[in-house]
Length: 605
Image (cartoon, rainbow, N blue to C red; front, side, top):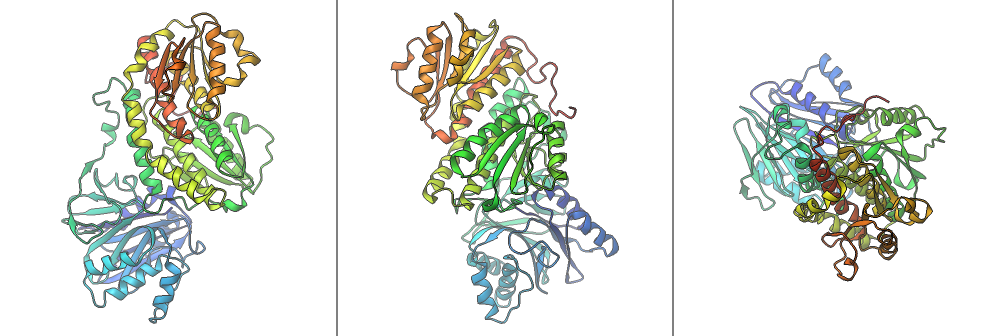
């Protein structure tokens, strides 16, 4: 993953490009570069390392010009050095690129036969050469269109031209690209994070689109070279971020946003045209990974537990999950062949950050999965995968938990495919199921009222249990945590098979029990455990996608989920447990957004 930005303005753009690149460093920081158009010539400057290195170069030798492009890189083709850094330029064209050109080797040979010479090892340079060649005989729009049609792969592009001194071109296939609108200036960027300090008006390119930016306007074209219009979205500024809108509180708003945030995350990481996952910057060869360690606290730890099941299911890699506050003090044998993944909503969780520091001091490979890309964990990790959930104000995490699980599932499948641990047909089926996830979440969200009735059973309960097996067990733990956080009722999440080993002694007449029973390979076993609870007087809330009526006897309430495949059950099971915690807390008049004794970002040990 790389980050790109482009600006055309009526004033010098280099400082704005640098500021935008700093916001994009979560996407890569092994090299950085900038090109501006200065007195009719392309002025390219680039270097290995972080944006701060590029800043030092510009301090000594400023880039001048009122239009330009910039890039931060994670290497995919070619080692991270100055030559391979973006932009890649000829005397006519300069290009920045996020993605992979799969037929770059074939294209290089084609254009070498025409007499062109390549300076770098990158796939991106072929784009520059092809554009330069077409511009000899074609106009700009036709040159861009014909170039894009020669490329196979995933890309977001930013381009400037020597002979078109008032235009920046953007293009997208697979990799996201946003367009921002200003007064006498317009922008492109890999996402709104890069543009939000310059504008709050954004459009998004769809696969196959390209655009021409001038100071006064933006022209959009689709994959058939037809002019099209784009919807303009207005981003929330800092004052609007804390607006609950029509919702009673932030938590209900954030629960309701989960289908949209899931869709946004998938748009970022999934190339639907190729059934490919756009994660390219893993700092260790997936084939060399001996073990994956997942580290987090609270809800983030539960997402790690969920990922443990997926990694075991879809890869041949050994995996462990650790609570960060324990990991940091244990004498853990750190190994350079292992990948250490740190999960945190805020990116500032003190114990998780300390565990990350421990790993960094021992020179092992680290990954941060966070919701705040400017955070400490994001900056310290070797590479970062944002969850793209947007601001989460409620202390009890909801949409960030869904986002953490989704990114962990996508990372698991990416590693599995790279290692050839997974059959390609199985991989494609999994991707198809994941693509349907936002719609399934939306359908589940529409059933909120069904939880309100059963919530009354919990108001005076002195305690409760959440039971699940397999994929459902981490969600049982998360459900118990949510109820504790919001309603201050004691709750525990158990592996359902453990009931006979102690917890069954706690069941008494009238005690509310939540049973997570998706129709998976554990279903019959879970039902047996549920019957043990019912036989001892427990009042069961059964959450399931089983449609049969025969199991309804003696069940207090049955919440039916839409049909789904077992590997995505965690996402759908999460929604009703959030609803339950929310409505119990609401009935008890608890402070839902700010539960007692808790804070959103845990920055102390």
